[in-house]
Amino acid sequence: MAPPPHHPRPRTFDELVAEGASVPTEGWDFSWFEGRATEARPSWGYARSMARRLARASAVLDVQTGGGEVLDFALGAAGSRRPPLVVATEGWAPNVAKATRLLCPGGVPVVASPDDAPFPFADGAFDLVVSRHPVKPHWSEIARVLAPGGTYFAQHVGPATVFELVEYFLGPLPEESRRHRQPEREREDAEAAGLEVVDLRAERLRMEFFDIGAVVHFLRKVVWMVPGFTADAYRDRLRDLHERIEADGPFVAHSTRHLFDVRKG
Image 1 (tube, rainbow, N blue to C red):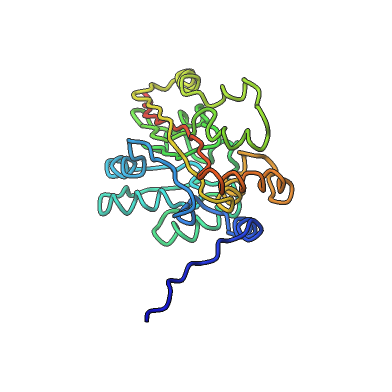
Image 2 (tube, rainbow, N blue to C red):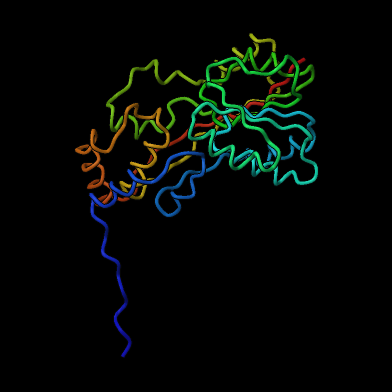
């Protein structure tokens, strides 16, 4: 007679929280969330679209590259048509180290540069500037380092992204906070810097968190969602959310993203 099937013991609240609190957070590799959380992707497929832009460029700057994962993928997809000059910047020390390990062996230098600092490059140095989820786009600096006819191609985080989760921990946020990162406001800022917005698209995308460990890891990784978040500081709210997920299923939130295709005249 065959032995009965083995059913793993469900992990406890404490075990899930401890796991989410211990996983390394550097870089923008989200593969750990496989089976733990999901997020719909924008229809434009940013990384592959970036690869097509790279194949037509000669000098490229990737701003706030994170761990370099998106740029590395896009360069691989561009293959033999990759541009002769590619440089990346990053402001968070753990990501600088990770991006350096990933990108430098392929000939891409990573420059440690604070997110709010002027770019350490000459005027008109690049014909393509790219960025995925910059903290804040520095339009005047983007315009300065772009060559005439050059392009800024980027995916930005939009307004009120994942606010269902943020407000679960922080309570209702002021209305002004929902107006941050509005794509039309960013369009105005780009145009004020002398840039032409060729295309601007926005989408709202469904996210699901299947266990409390995924919530803990997400809030540790995306640190600006709940500033100062630690599992200990929010343990009571985490326990309430764990019980809600156990009873009702995944916690649902929504991210917002917008795509900028901008040209310097």
